[in-house]
Amino acid sequence: MRIHFPFTSALFFILSSALLISCENKREDIESLFKHKSGVETAKDVTIIYAIGANVKAKITAPLMLRHVDPAPMVEFPQTIHADFLDSTQKVESVLNARYAKYFENESKVFLKDSVVVFNKIGDTLFCQELYWDRRKTGHEFYTDKPVRIRTKSHIIDGDGLDAPQDFKSWHIINGRGIVRVPNTELP
Image 1 (tube, rainbow, N blue to C red):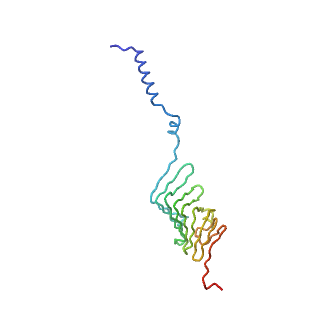
Image 2: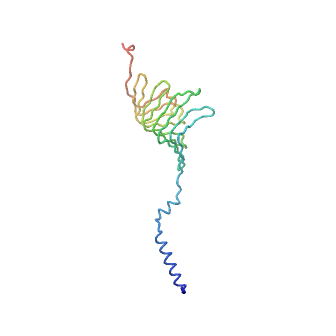
Image 3: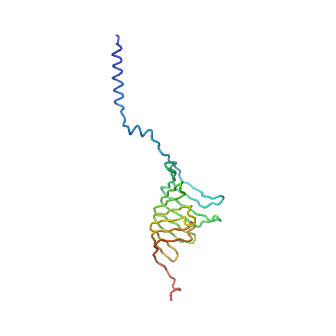
């Protein structure tokens, strides 16, 4: 049996066309294959030591850390974060806890949110929902324009924002209001 060349060519053309038609892709699908996808580095149970020169300034721990490379480098702590800020003798001068944090590498700034708590070594405690820590703002590293509450041994102070140094020894509250407990010995 002899097959003529035109018949073979026609059969090849029909089969090729059927394959091409059945493999049609949308333009968006093809373009998505070539798009640059940003990388995310993941680390679990991290401990970060922040030091300036030979002086350790903070020890940060978190169960999960995500480092986003693009478009701007950013580190995210989506589960919780804990930070111990240390003085020059390596003793803890303040402690910070939050359920979420985001560190913007290009700005050297940390955004904290969701049940943020900061306390110092004498027991003064700050409660808020959003707080920034910016190491470039020397003496005012902590700040927010959201509602805050500070509890001391003798005061409960609410405000519409605050700024404070990293050691949290002092603070400035915006529109402060609250309760001051006065011991009986100080009453007339």
